[in-house]
Length: 264
Image (cartoon, rainbow, N blue to C red):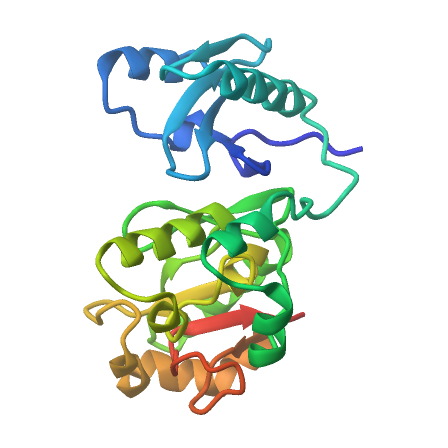
């Protein structure tokens, strides 16, 4: 069995995840001290809030006020993290996802038949693949991370600079996108023209990347006019990547020249 390297791996759970403390930025002085004494920072996936720090001896220090049930669930997840052993399953169960979709008024059978998309489970662990444009840790599966690094280096050798805008995003994160857009008055149908329903985004797999280049706006159709896009069109397949949503794609998702998926 393989032991985790705490500086390179995100440990994933259905409600929480654990990221290496050295990759986190403390916003308060007391949190900074906790991070300096810890190996992992535990985070609530729904809103990205840091909840607790965990050291190498299993000591859990809660950093945010939690209700009883959530505190118990977090403690159970911390115990799981402390095994430091790669899980025997490659993906997480789709626990609670049906209820999330019902809250949006979406029936899975209807959505799947209409779009041709399938549910995408989340990996139980992801590899640190460097930083994205915004200096945030970029998380991908092991194989996608290696392919991304190789592809970026090959592009650089050809005088093209590729920037990652985002990689892995969880089910809860996708649900948050919908909730924020609905709060601004958008309908679910309008949102679905741009975003896949929670549970159906390729970003959940840890194998999808939104890519841009320096000076180019993120996730804009204008990316297709850049040397970076031309390079990807010609070379990305050599590294296992394909563009998921070309013009007039059968899924009903808008043209996304920036979205590339590692299919190998």
